[in-house]
Length: 144
Image (cartoon, rainbow, N blue to C red):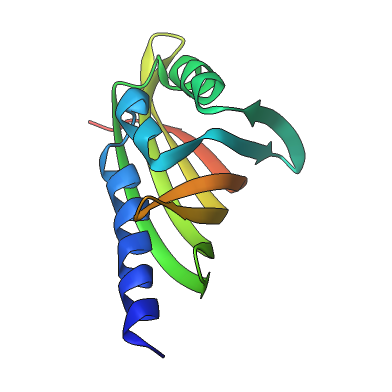
C-alpha cells in the first residue's frame, strides 16, 4: 500500500469521524458533502428518503433531527477502497438519539451501515453519494 493511499484513507476516516462528532448539527455536517450529493436512506428495508443536493439534505435531515435533544454517534468497522480521486467507504455506526414521545424521554438506538462514494475535490475528500441503511432500531424509555 502506498503512502498516498494511506494518507487518503486517513483523510477519509477524518471526514467520517468529524461528521459523526457533529452529531445533529446538520448545517455543519453539510461541508462534508458535494453540492450535488445523492443520499438514500433505508428504514425497515424500504427507501425512506431519496435526497438530491446538499441543500435538500440540510432541509430533510434538519427536519428529521429537530426533536432530538441529545445524541451520541459511535463509528465501528470501516473498509475504505481508494482509486485515485475516488473512494468507497463502508462503515457501521451506532447512533443513539434522545427524544420525547408522548411526554416521556426515550432513547432511539439506531444501528446503521453507510456505503459512501467519496471524491477528492481541491485536495479535500467529500461524500458524493451515501447509501444509508438503518439495520436495527430500538426505542426505549429513559430510566432514572
